[in-house]
Length: 397
Ligand code: F3S
Image (cartoon, rainbow, N blue to C red; front, side, top):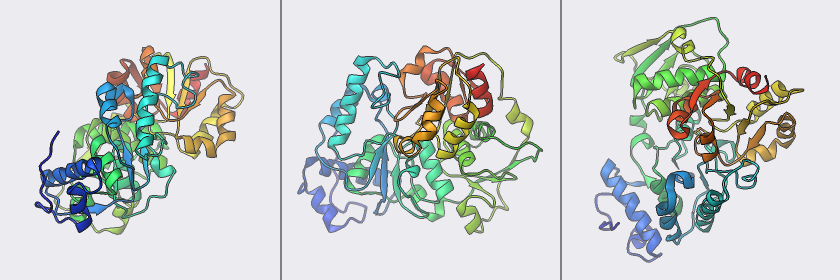
């Protein structure tokens, strides 16, 4: 694709950027900056903003195929900010143990090698915030929708939901167009969700189910929740699901999330949507399943500890997959060993949605609202949501 972008055209560019556009630093950096400028023009950005990190999607061979691999292999530049990948179609080291087809593994490895050549860190995860400090106000160029939601909402960093090429271009240039959620004025709530109080202690799965339900109602608006008090893992589940059934890239929770605590939002004119707990409970069914998969988004250390506790002294009777970032697994190896004593497997780099292995099951139990939304289409399987306690019970009974 050819872009015709004149230096300085519609956007303020630094002299260094103009040199890149002149081709002084090679064709790849030239094309990547042209892409960022073109995106900025489409979305009305007045300038580029420096980013602290990038997270690049389009890493699973299942989704990018030969065409994507050929494009990546044609590029010649190095990332200039810390950059990681979205989950790929297999664990990089234990793919045989996950029973991945050798032919797929060979092509997936080629994709990984292409990214490695571009200086992208081969950590493949949707939870990059567990690996590298990300702070309030940081500008980022992240791709994966749950990571984008967590960065914006739970951390108070700033990122649009980048497409794979846009995030890669940002990684190679170190900047992204400054529009959308990079601007304070676009981060205000647009709809209020009032969850009717109930007596239950809400689980991570119930927050995921709330997100599944709420995402369908709010679409791409910025919701402001009242009457809930989720912890960070529960916020992660809530945001991931809303990004899947809707297109929510930022949400606020009264007295919980950083911008809701810091800002005095004017909420008086906003529509209020009420959600009854019974609407959430309806999503929990008892359908039989032939596999259980948790870690969508990838598990936190606390979630791994919880799973190890629940599995203690038990053996799995059906495949039980747990997904987490390689760095989180490495830092919690004893906990992972305790989990795997049961026969469950903790895999890095991949997940129940992007790995072709999951397509062999007809019904999969998850504890995630996002997985509940994606498993049917991406794996061709029926999905059932349950708490982590229910998942362990089903996997070991
Ligand atoms: Fe992450 Fe895969 Fe879920 S990328 S958010 S574990 S669908």
